[in-house]
Length: 382
Image (cartoon, one colour):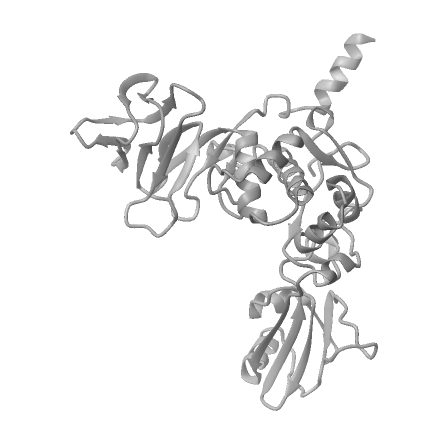
């Protein structure tokens, strides 16, 4: 019986038990062939192909570049070496370093953990091997901002942690866990904001699961405009905890109202691309006067998805109405983002009203539970 129970536990936890450190690809947007590593505190060892090469002290920059089929490092005092794989390791886990690209506008990143560098087609693969909770604090700061009640940041910490554990290994074929851009989660580096650090520490190890104990799709967006969207209306996947909800908390916060004016000629071109003949019909606000999130618009007898219109005209959300006036089409809308899952502005209001992070996640992800990641399981992949 004990052997049977052990097997079940191992089945529930593939890839989760040893997730204390993750590898994060840096500079995912720019794919640099050169960058500069500079220790801020402590001493560091540069290891080439598994063997120690040099030691680096605080303030001593190391220039690391792609050179033919090798990785080249150079110091200011003239030391250089070619290698296949480069590791830079601290003598203390609390040591801090910076990385930056020369002549690039992307911000300097302040990090801890270690670095691993090897060649990738056309550029360098630069990986930050970092403690997962340190990484999460940086993600929460980048994705959720720095202003808000403590329970709001706890909510974002649990959401970000759920995302990481659900997606561990999504870049396995390329040799890392997460990238530092919106494809995964934005990661700018370590932070000092106490409210965020405390939020991550107080929720350490906690994730959101569905009724089957599977890690959920922990989607979020900036502002829903008063009504969230169903995942099935935005993406291919339909989940019972990602349904459309009326969100009065979002309406109580700062409204996000926008307007876009489009020349009729541009609208005609869009319709033509979908084999729709233009007619001067008007799409207007429903007779109730309430703006309702629509999945499709009926344009001259043909259904066109709100997502297509949003993408084509770069709108802030899919919560909008369309009106024609003369040679101009006016699109008025509310909200910002895809609308699925947690509304950040609504969550801030809930937290300011004394709601806990468990209540907030329960509202935006109905039918879910918060558990320790050791009791969670990866979802069954199709």
